[in-house]
Amino acid sequence: MGKIRELPVHVANQIAAGEVVERPASVVKELVENALDAGANSLEIRLHNGGKSLIEVRDNGEGIAMEDLELSILPHATSKIYDEEDLSSINSLGFRGEALASISAVSHLIITSRPEGQEQGWRVAVSFGRDRQFVPAGCPRGTTVQVRDLFLEVPARLKFLKARQTELSRCLKVIRAFAVCWPEVSFSVSNEKRQIFRGTPGRQGIERLTPLFGTEILESMCEISGQADGMSFEGFLASPEEVRLSSRHMYFFLNRRLITSPLIWKAVNEALRGRIVKGNFPAGVLFIDMEPELVDVNVHPSKSEVRFQRPELVYRMLYNGIKRPFSASVNLCEEPVSDSISNERVQSEIPFSTQGRTLKGDFVAEEAERAYESVANAKVQPPGLDNQGQVRIIGQFARSYILAEIGERLLVFDQHAAHEALLFKRLLNEIKDKGIVKKEPLVFPHLFTVNTSMMENLDKIREILAGLGLEVIVFGQRELAIKAIPVYLSGVSDAKYTAQEIVCQLLENPHRSGHEALRECISRMACSMAIKAKCALHKEQMASLVEDCLSEGVSSCPHGRPIMKQIDLGQMEREFFRQ
Ligand code: ADP
Ligand code: MG
Image (cartoon, rainbow, N blue to C red; front, side, top):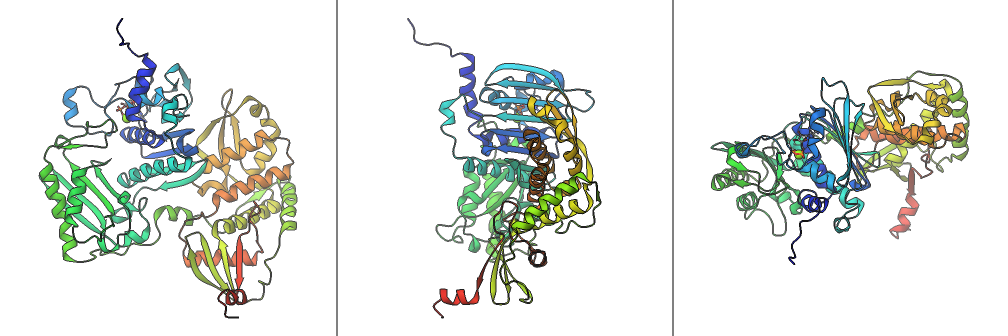
């Protein structure tokens, strides 16, 4: 009897999926490509557990029509090419029609979509290639793709996934690269409901590179460009003398697609030969554009390798373009780059003061009073800080700590904890004074699913929700919609998710005392609003934060962590054996 057998379909599909989907970052890449191909200019990406438990990409693109939705998850089903001729001039990021099919074979996949003009949204769900469901679903225009539990039922692949942090940074790297290459699109990324990246649209010139490079290295970068028949490139390279990075900091984009290419590497290395110290690598970005006919992107399932029609021309264009400025001068970077990079700008726009907003009402005020007392009782004034004279800001350490001098003491503030503590105290104070938090309607209600027992608790928490400025309505059997959020959250990038988290916490524990719940909600709000670690601050911002903390007697964050440590001169001198 023969030995050859046809594999069961789902095993065959899982094998095929291996080519496209290797890890969470590859799923992120495919989903982002689809959103960009759909013309979206705003992408919200949610990850859990570094993408291993959840990857969700929500876009505002053209959506998928009902009749296409079920087809979209079939192998080799695509709307982007029709026949083999189209293969020779590809204008979209996707074209193989494999990504969704592959992902559906190795995860719980749910796609919800509504194109403009279609009254009703639809949802298709598949679990590891089985149990396909197709149901109507309320949703805004655009598409949301959710991928849960990647590889959970494929042990051979699951075991190759790395720790959460490693998978997360791979996902982020992919997204940052897209953000650099698609500067007109806004990207917002959260992991475990906390925003971890935001790429705001509209950056130009070297500022485009901000998501991938720190400001220091940007400052040393020089612009390069070149042209040849049917192709051109522009880019930025760090001055070779400045470069201290590993090879992972060189990015090549071809027709707005991140690619790898030995040929391009060769051109870069040759052009910089003799200028880069041994052991260092060049750092920078090249944006190459060429007529689609001049390049074959259908070389590898992940489309990251390409075949050039005229490799020698590509090589010469890059070699000459790179060599020229670097042989003229050590550092041709003409314009020093401003030190406020954009995702940091997002942070610094969050007001330090929350004064001047209207609040009214009773219930919440009373609860706030109680919550406030518990903070006030726990408060300890940092020893000996009053009457010590002027605070002098020394600077920032690791973009996370503020160093200041007062009298003969060195103070080190944890910027996030300090700001959070300050906001927490002020929010409580205001709610105590005026009662109810002013709310702000959301342009699109934010929908989320809860379990039945949470649903039943909704009525029990109505009062506290209203007090907090949260408007929540029942949207379906197990879906709620947040229609308005507290005005304080309106400038915060992951506001909807913070609001959702607060609502869910309340629904899960409706019997907690009012002030305990309020305290937790306000603490969650303060945490979202506060400036984050790893965020550059201006001197004035540091000064105002430090002064406010000292004058308002804030000393520990709502979670009980200290916000500040100090060393006095005597201690310092002892450390250095001067005493
Ligand atoms: P490909 O991108 O290669 O066409 P995919 O499997 O990634 O293949 O997607 C299949 C089809 O589903 C796409 O051709 C497109 O028509 C549709 N699609 C997928 N994601 C989206 C999205 N976010 N918005 C609109 N259409 C989408
Ligand atoms: Mg695709």
